[in-house]
Length: 238
Image (tube, rainbow, N blue to C red):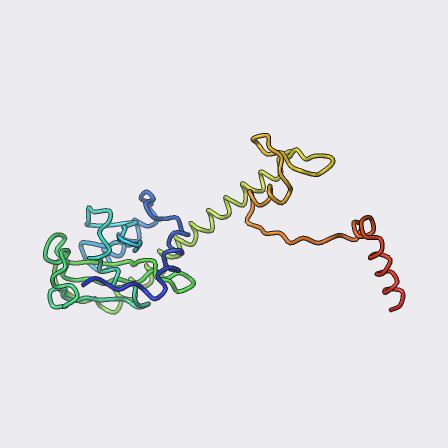
C-alpha cells in the first residue's frame, strides 16, 4: 500500500532541501551511525533514508546496494507519518506491505523498524531504519539505542547546515572587506562586471536583507527646511 502524504508535506520538503544533503557523497559520520545501528540491532541492513517528493534516497547504508527506491514502495514513507518508531515484525503478515515488491522480491524485507528523523520544528525528513530478512522483535535497549542514533543523525545534519551558513557569511564578510568602487557623487557602486548600481541593489545581491527608507535629520534640514523649523518649534513648545 502506498503511504499517504504527511500533513505538512510542503513544509517538510522545503526543510529537507534546506539541508542540501540529497545526492551528496558518502560521509563517514553517517556511515558510522548506520554501522552502529546494524550492530546494535543485529540486522543485516541499516539505512539513513530521506524521503523526497517521489523517491527515498539513502544517505548512508549497510547491506544494500541500491542508492534509492521509489517512494511508492517505501516503508519509510509510512514511518514519517508519525513522530515515533514504526516497527513491522513480519511484513508478510501486514496488509500494508504483504504484496510490496521489496517484500516479495529483493531485498526480501520481513522485519522493519524505522525511527523518524525529526527536525527541531518537528518535521520528519526520513528515518534511521533497520531491516532483516526474517521476522523478529527488538529488545527495549535496542529501541532506545536506535532512537538515540536517529537523534545523532539529525544533529549531524544540523551541523552541516550551520557550517554551510557560516561559510556563506564569511564569504560575504570577505567581499565587504574588499575595496569597493563607489561614485563620489551619487554613491552608486560598481560591480565586478563594471556596471553601476545603487547601494541597496548591491547589498541585496550579497546579503539576505530588505530595506525600508526614511530621511535623516541632516537631509530634512537641507531639503525640507520648513519641516525642520516646525519640529524645532514643537520641541521648544514642549
